[in-house]
Amino acid sequence: MKSEYRCLFCGKLLLHQESGSLWHEDCAKAHFKDPVLPNLAIKLSEFDALALEALKHGESLSGPQKKLALGLSPKTFRGRLVPSDLNKLYILKPQSSDFPHLPEAEEFGMDFAEAMGVPVVPHALVRLADHSIAYLSKRVDRKLEGNELIKIPFEDFAQLAGISPAQKYRGSYERAALVIDHYSRYPLLDKADLFYRVLVSFVLGNSDLHYKSLYLQEDSKGGYALAPANDLVPVALFLGGDGALGLSLLGKKSQIHRKDFVRFGSKIGLYPKTVNVMIEKVLSLQEVGLTCCAHSYLPQNEQSRWNALYLSRLNALRFH
Image 1 (cartoon, rainbow, N blue to C red):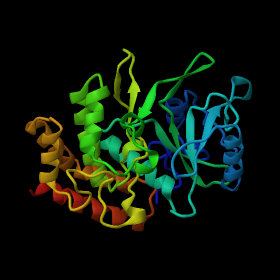
Image 2 (tube, rainbow, N blue to C red; image 1 turned 90 degrees about the vertical axis):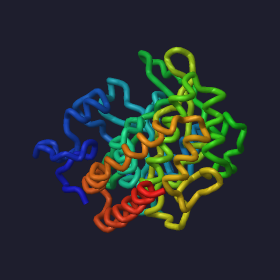
Image 3 (cartoon, rainbow, N blue to C red; image 1 turned 180 degrees about the vertical axis):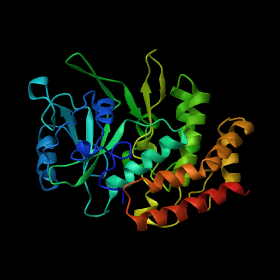
C-alpha cells in the first residue's frame, strides 16, 4: 500500500505539515480551488442514513455502488463538503462491505486510463471522519455560474438507443458506435475515442463498460460529443470469470485478441492505420501502466494479481 505520507490526489510524497490531510496544498487548490482541503465530516457508519435522507428528497444516483452527492458549503461555512447543499457537484463512494478496497481500485482505474490518454472526469481519494478512504469524483453534467447550478444536457447511451437500464449489458460496441453516428457533432473523432476506451478497458480488466457508462454531453457550440470517462474499475479483481468486456465486440465478450479490435475498428469506419496506432500506443505504455499500479493504494497482493492480468491482456494485443 502507499506510504501514509503520499498525497491521495497525485500519489507523490507529502511535506510533514501536509500529512494530516494526505493532500498537497497545490493539489487541493487544483481540485477544489482552495489550498485548504474541505472537511468531510462523514463517517462510513452514517452513510446509509445520509443516502436514505437524500432519497427522501428525491435525490437518488443510479448505479449499484453506494454513493452520495455532495456540495461545497457557502463561504460562510467555508471548507466543508456536505450532503445538504444545493450545489451538488461531487459524488462520494465509500468502502464496500462486498468488495474491499473498491474506492482504491476505482481511483487506480481512473489514474490508469488517464495515463493511457483517456479523457476522464476530475477524481481523487479522500479520507472520511473515521479515517476510512473514499472515492470522490466531480460531476460534469452540472456547473456553477455564480450561485446558480446549471444542468448540462447529458444522456447515456441506453437512453439514446432506447434501451432499458436492465438491458445495459445486452448489446454491442458496434451499436454504441451507431449512437455516436446518429447524435455526435464529430462522429469519427468520437468513434476513435470509443474504440480507445474499449481497448483501455480491456487491458485494465474493466468488464463494466456498458450502455449506462457511456455518455454524450452538449458542448459549447450546442452539439454533442462523447463525455469524459467515469466509473473505470478493474472489475476482474473482484469478479474474476472469463468476461473481458461489458458489451460484445463482434459477438464476443471473451477470448479477445488484436484481430478482434482490428475488425471492430474497420466495422465502425476507422482507418486501419488509426486502429493500429492506438493499439501500438497502449502496448508502448506498458511500463507506465505498471508504474501506475505500483503507485496506487491497492494492497500488494491485488497489485500482483492485476499486473498478471495486465501483461496477459497486452500479450493478446501483440499477436493476431
